[in-house]
Length: 372
Ligand SMILES: Cc1ncc(C[n+]2csc(CCOP(=O)(O)OP(=O)(O)O)c2C)c(N)n1
Ligand SMILES: [Mg+2]
Image (tube, rainbow, N blue to C red; front, side, top):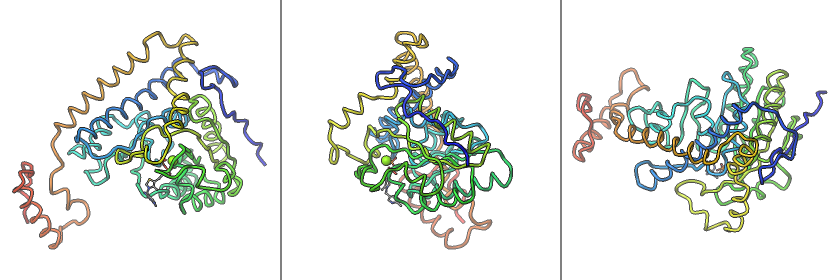
């Protein structure tokens, strides 16, 4: 029987002071973590503004979750996989999803690698092992476990980090995925991002027990960390990821944090939660906490955060402008990729659609080349 790992719930207290063992990470790595966290916030802020301005369709906010996603995903190696729940786009950017592809997907334009077939804000990236994710809660969990088992059989030395929210712990996928991972000893780390809410359902309503106790139920080690503490989250994820890699031991990490904004750009959280609760969590802001720590360690100069933030915003604005001007996806992509020869009923539908788009002035140059 392997010994339980020694994992601390908190390393930085909400005031940014060291309260656990210093993980002694290099100054470069610490600064990188901070920039990645700031990028998440900057992307979030800009995408929400674009959505409010009617330029893009939908945004699932990452506000408040910066330490949870960056800290945990920073523990992954390039050969590892990240199976997204709903809000790990910022972690994907850190792992190499190009900002241009991220924003192209937001616009669903001609550069979108999903060809506009996914819902807005549902990115994917082959190069960094970031599979396209589904809005259907919990479906990524058994997919990730199956892929983790395949990696084990192929000796790929890859760990699969499977992200999901507190709400997803009530899905079939969660239970069957955890069970198979335990039975198969799959190299999977289950990242349960408990952000307080599943749309309007508080996280305390998903189970009469605790999330961390679910590990026991499926024969795997489980820990809870303060998800607003990037150092504690990173350290915990690092230990569990390395054990999964070296011993094929799955594990559950409950990352306790708070979704500061609405569930999505379509939600109004003031209808179901108190401002006092939001204010309590604002006082634990993961970026403020880490900024204080870095400043006191002499790793961030005065005004450093503002400087980095405005550089990130400039880069995002520049890319958003480019993607807004990019050509649209050709209409014929509607009937591409499924049949070698487009069948008659789809040709008819396509031709009717082409007529409508011509009438509305939406047809792109070249679209007319395809009436069949
Ligand atoms: C199977 C299924 N049921 C319901 C929904 C509607 N739905 C979308 S997101 C969501 C809540 C998800 O909460 P959680 O897992 O905590 O993730 P979070 O949004 O907090 O990141 C629900 C119920 C869905 N998409 N899929
Ligand atoms: Mg949630």
